Image 1 (cartoon, rainbow, N blue to C red):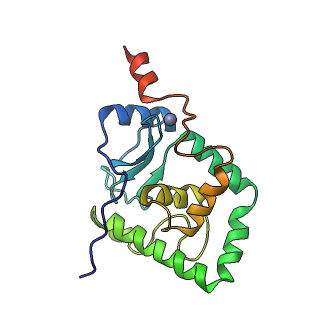
Image 2 (cartoon, protein in one colour):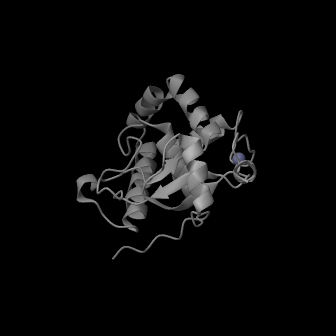
Length: 184
Ligand SMILES: [Zn+2]
């Protein structure tokens, strides 16, 4: 038996308020919510942890899902600069990066398996891991949930995004406080 992972460092329970807030962040209901893996400074969900299988039975590989609008936008802007192709090429040329990224992939699968298994997505993690960098939102989701040193491209994207936004500096249009106020 492999050693169990340390608990996710920032994980907390998902409340009704969190579900309402995520619906505002995403414009739709987030399904298969297990917990909140990381929060914005204001308390809003930033990364949601989902179950490997959604309530309707469909498998859902991206178990650490970035919802924080300012960070989602920052990742999209970085992707628009062509970083996905650039970093994939760099990955292909570096044994060290390949090793670290493969470990991030394994960690992703192990973490998800804590909540059960869906055979359709066995061995499939997220974001293009382990051979490509296909989605910064997914690798940043893992980096925010697990903390630094786990996903090399997630850490790097967070560092680059930090010129405009960080998890510690709230830029939310809707926060737990404003949502509560609006619902009074
Ligand atoms: Zn916030």
